[in-house]
Length: 181
Image (cartoon, rainbow, N blue to C red; front, side, top):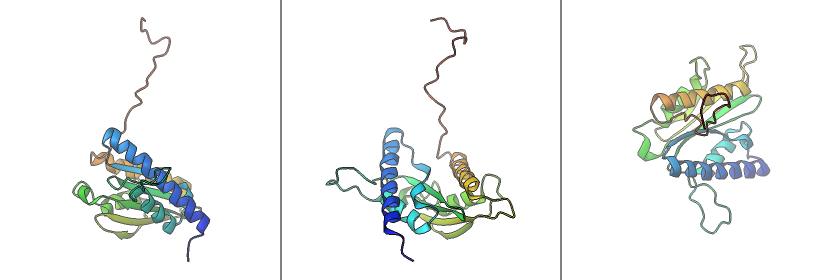
């Protein structure tokens, strides 16, 4: 079944924008791996793959608004609807010795406690797809599982020293913090 053209356009647009953001983060801080949600994909695997392609696409210098350009960044994209959380992972060829897309995806699908039981649909060193289906009887709901998948993905990256959770830099002391100005 072909994706609805309006939805496809929205997913590609969001993916392209995310690509620009991730490229900017990479250039500022050298972070090579990111986990992010694509709301416009609406839990549809084809739309999420289209968003990934848009994020990685070489930017067209003729375009007014830059899009994509983040092919040097490994990324886990997540999207959900009421039925499932879908995950698409991409790892650049030059980063596969740090992690493969398949290993990263497996860790994400397991969830933060190892009991989420997502299903790996496809997995290679550079590309992987997975799904976590809702299961109301087991008390599994996709909104929660999307957050669990995000947490599991970030935890995996942190464990491999591929992502650093930065503390807020703009700390402002309380008036009573005992600091003399």
